[in-house]
Structure formats: C-alpha cells, structure tokens
Image (tube, rainbow, N blue to C red; front, side, top):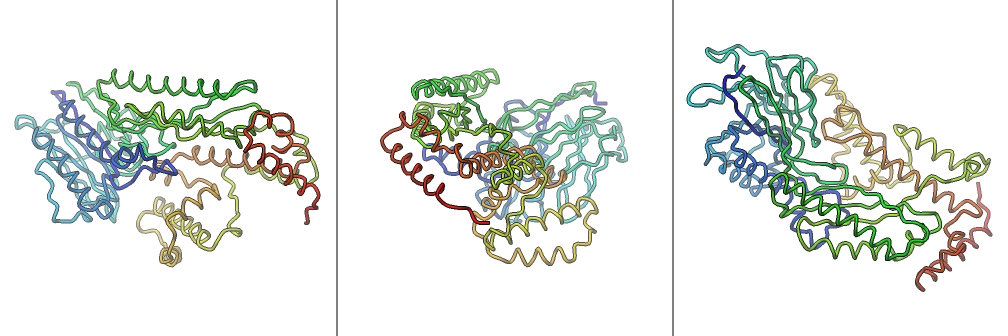
Length: 519
C-alpha cells in the first residue's frame, strides 16, 4: 500500500490524424470547429492535467500516426508535452499500433519529461516524490510482436508495497485482472471508454478524447485517477471532446401545422442547448468551441408522412433551426430531420403467395437474423466486390492472430490479401460497400480493437430493411403506395411544385399498374 496519496491522468487514442467522419458534408459555419476538433480535444487533456495539478500522466495508445499527420502532428504533441514539462509533470507513454516508437522519426525529440515504454518487453519505472518512490508503472508499447501483460514483478528495496499501474494496449487477458499486484490497468486501443473491472483492481479503457460520429454518443475524454493514502482508488471522467452527438425522436401529429412542428423542434433544441450550458457550468468549464450535433427522427401519422418525406417542410425546419442555434456557443447543429417509417404493414400482406409476399418474408427474415449475411455482391461493380473480399480476409487474419498469436499460419490468406491490396480503390468505395451490404458485424475481438458496438451496425441494418419493406410494399401493393395516400387528401397541403410531383407519381403508378411483372 502507498503511504501518501497522489493523482494522475489517464488518456488514450487522440488519433490526431483521424478526422470527424459523422457528416456527409461539412457545413461552412462549422468547418474550422470540425477540422480542429482532434487537436482541441487533445489540448484539453493537457489543460486538465495542469488544472487538476496531477502528479503524472499515463498515455496509452494511438495518439497519432506520424505518417498521416506529418510534422504538424508531432510538433503539436511536443508543444503539449512541453506545457507539462514546465510544471515538472512526467508523462509515461505506452504507444499503440499507429505511434509505436519504431515509426516516429528520430529527428523529432520529445521533452525530457516524456518516457516511452519499449517495444517487445515490459519495463518498470517509478514515480518519485522528494527522492522516494511513490508509484510503480509497468508498461510496454505496441510493436510487431505484442507482449502479454503481467503484474508480478521482482520487488525493489523499499518499494515492495508500492501502488502499481499497468499501461497496456489491446485486449487485456483475463488472468491479468486476477493479479492483485497491479492496482490500476491503464488500457488503450479502444475508441469507447469502458471500466472493465473495479475489484480486485481497476481496469479502464480511457477511450478516445474526441467523439467523431453518431455511434460515439455520450462523453469522451480523459480519466482522472485519485489514489488515497490507504490505496483506495477512484476514477472520474473529465470531458475533453468539443463534439457531442445524439439522435432525438420527435412526434408530429396529423393535425399539426408546419409552424407547430417547427416550434416543437425549436423547443427541443433550446432545451438541449441549455442543458449543455448547465453541465459545463457545473463542471467549471467553458462551452467555447463546443458543438452538439443532433439528428432528429420524426415519428408521424401515415397521413402526413408523404408530405414530410416528399415536401419542403423538413428542409424549412432544418434551415430555421440551423439559423437560430449556430450563432453562439455551445452550438447546436441539426444534421437532419428525417421522417422514419414504422412497421405497420398488415400481417396478411406477409402471408400472400405473391411476389410482394415473398419479398416481405425475405426482408423480415433478414431483420430477425441480423448476423445473417445479405449477399448482393453479384450486383455490385468489381471494385466493390474486391473491397468486400479484402475486408473479409483482413477480419479473418485478425481473428486468427487474436486466437493463435503472431505464429498463426496465414499463408494463402496473406497472398490473397496482398493481391487485393495492390488494386486501386476509390476513396468512397468502403463507405458505399458498408451502405449497400450491412454485412454481419465482425467478431468480438475485432470490435474491441476498433471500439465498435455490434448493436450500432445491427440497428442501421434494421432501419434499412424496414425502409426496404415499406418501399417494396409501396411499389408492389395495389393500394398502399404514397400515391394512394397523396390522393387521400394530404396532397391538398402541398405546394404547387409538390402537387406537380404528386401528379407525376400518379402517372407513374398508372403506368406500373398497366404492366405485367415477368418472372
């Protein structure tokens, strides 16, 4: 046990080279905020270390890729390290895959307060106060050969009962959690913050310092660890991400006007903005630079759904909300205002022995079996098929390595991967493949490695299949298309331009009704 209390900051996964990826387009008014967000989040880590007057900082994994950030990223990191050096705060860094010591150019020298753990072995260092050791840090950096962590070390004279911290990247072996020799595991390599264990020891993935898309909801930041004189440990999240993402649901009634819908949405956004300010004030931090990105999912009666989907109402609401809530910090930016479909297709339509019935039963099967692969690659261009094959081989290789280590026999897999890697792919190929396949989620080990959650991908797939079911029913059913709903009275509220569109839809429907569907 330690006889003196101390505190340190644990942070990981700055990923200074990784941009914000949760938007299809970059709004002009948010351009600088989105571009600088990775560096702002990282800078807040070091500001928090100074504000909290920590004794030292432990960094685990993937702060940057020197190849992708270039000199700017490394110089930025050196400047931040120097801020702590001026206050005599040491930094213990267990580097990850992208920033392993063997990929950092030798021309860049880090300040003297920075200690980078070696690749291929576990090193033991001590934090000293007034010449006496106060804490032990065991660490290893990621390299070509991963090193399994261990907690039992040979004691040194006068330090046999020191509070011990393990700094490690990747999935922590279960046996390491049982070792009471390490009181706190500082883990890196996952974008999501997670406390793996609290007893008999703490094990914490600090997660990324920045939330980059709608799958990364909640608070992202660094972990403040306080160790009492008795060795009692508490871990507290300190938010550093200037961006927060959320999906909100709003309900629009059949008798609700456009003005009423806008007022309801404005009230919701105002409440979000006020809550952001209250939370910042409670935490004693400024909201300067903070941006909340909100995606609205609109539940609407079937009678008003076509007007929302095909009319100008949603665009008007989004434009007005962006105008009203992007002038002062914290900014609340409405990404979209999207009407969603509900599964209200009559059960009897699923039971029909028709093309529509066959189609709906197939869609339902894939909705109820999210792990089942939807094989539509035969309809894709060759480039996308090659991309899909490449990703599956990479996943299989990673799975084998996780199970068998670096000695795994990759043989034919490595050869096939090399051939696919040699091909040229357009920048958008990966995103298009994801959007069109909604492939089964990768294994648990791979999810841990990249910080994904299986539920995120499965929910996207379910939403897409629900849309497919509704559109299929619209096209194949006799009286269940948006055209029929428009003819039922909703078209009266549309603008002149949209009434023309409705007329074109009616004409198209009549043409479809007069044609036979071949086998």
